[in-house]
Every structure is written in C-alpha cells, then in structure tokens.
Image (cartoon, rainbow, N blue to C red; front, side, top):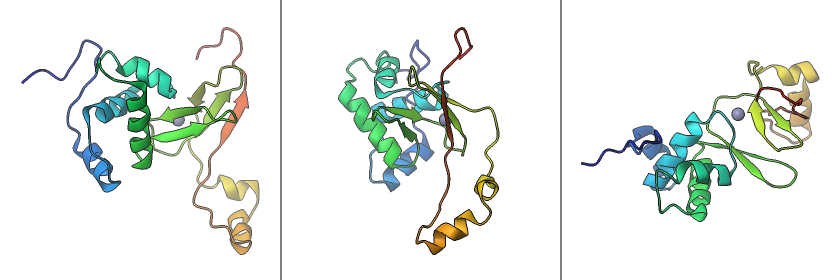
Length: 158
Ligand SMILES: [Zn+2]
C-alpha cells in the first residue's frame, strides 16, 4: 500500500468521524474531501476556496477548483466546516467548529480568530431579555456571531 503522507504533510487517512458526519448529511467521503478537511483543520488562516485549492493541489495533482468548491459545499453542509461570507459574497472557510469570534480586515478580506473566549451570555449583556423579547416577536435565537471589522495596522503580525 502506498503511503498517504506526501512531502507537503497532507494526509489522506480515513477519518471515521469525518466519514460518519459526511454520510449523515448524505455525502460520500472522498480523497478530495478528506484532503480539504485536513487542510482546513490545520490552517492557521480562514482560507478562500482558491487558497484551499492552491494548498491542497500538491497532494492531489488532478484536483480542480470545481472539486474544491464541491468538497467545501459538502463539508459545510455536513456541519464540519464554517463558511464566512462578506458583503462582496466572497467566502472564507473555517475548520474550527467551537464557538469563537472573528476579526475581518476590510482591506484584504482576511479573517482571523479573536484571542478571547466565547461568551454565551453576551446577548444578555447587550440587552437584558433580548432573547425573550425576540421570542415574543416570533424569532427563535439559536446562537450568535461576532465579527469585528477594521484594518490591519501596517507591519502588524498576522
Ligand atoms: Zn474562526
């Protein structure tokens, strides 16, 4: 059996949890989906589909951008990967599924995680009984997201 580890550190190892989550959402596990998932889980950034394509292509030489888009769709649909879109519609993908907050650079579109813990009581801090008020208006709140916007300072570490 050929090694599934490439010179780029990509793995194509079967991941039972990945297979089960994909199957539950009606998707098959493929080598391409596994490679995209592995990259997203280890990436220090929130890459675009094009960045995923550039990173994973060395592992799977015949990979196409269309296949990467399909893999990302399957992973998002299965709840394994987050999709963060901006006002231009461009999406960044997030392999981290625990609740957390983001900062988005308005110049580059780059998204990074904020170095603070997720606060499940944030909505109550914004307005006491906000969730109850919304419920009475017919909205059922299931969670919240926070994204700070701004520019990276010149020379700042990213
Ligand atoms: Zn994130």
